[in-house]
Image (tube, rainbow, N blue to C red; front, side, top):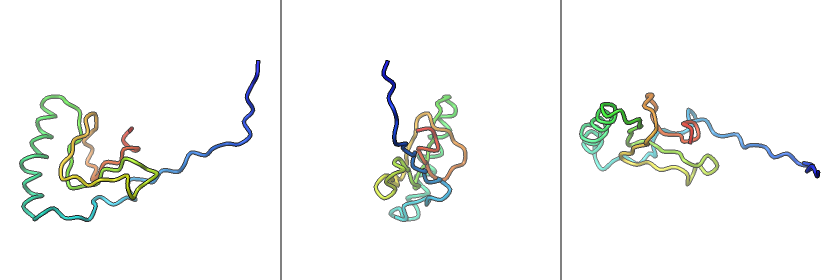
Length: 102
């Protein structure tokens, strides 16, 4: 039986911590009412409905969604409203995929 010999170890890159990343993309919504309306008519009702329907999901808006820890410049979006099925509402101000399990 041949046993491979490893001559070089690879290191897992240190991932950035969510607490050190900005909450928003810095781009304001069209106007103040837009954010209020998104929360009142989309985010809060969706959270309630998901909870009542026993659908586990994170519902957020006007915050960052980080999906690529190795490219923080391009691996982030700032949608007005978003839903992450299987996510959990824990009071977080942004979604950092590698801290949320994927």
